[in-house]
Length: 79
Image (cartoon, rainbow, N blue to C red; front, side, top):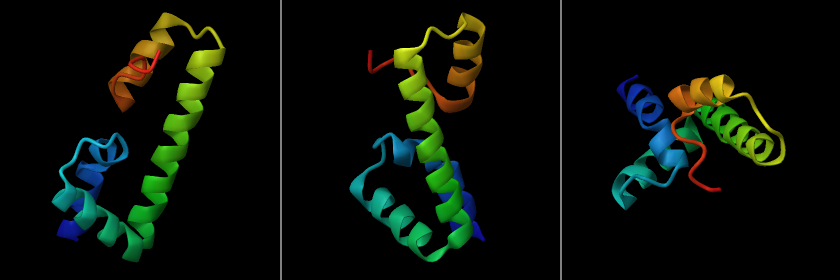
């Protein structure tokens, strides 16, 4: 259970490539053997891609962007 908690705690940093190699490998290894964590990782990765694509192609209300940034971190860095 502790591995799941740590994996979920570091999920966004993992997806954003902000972890050191040791932590990244530990999370990847755990998620590879834990269906619950892998499902959450896949969901968050896909959600980030969809939001990023929509934010670049459609004009989103500033309030929505603020709420998304609060949930996912700053999504406007790539523009």
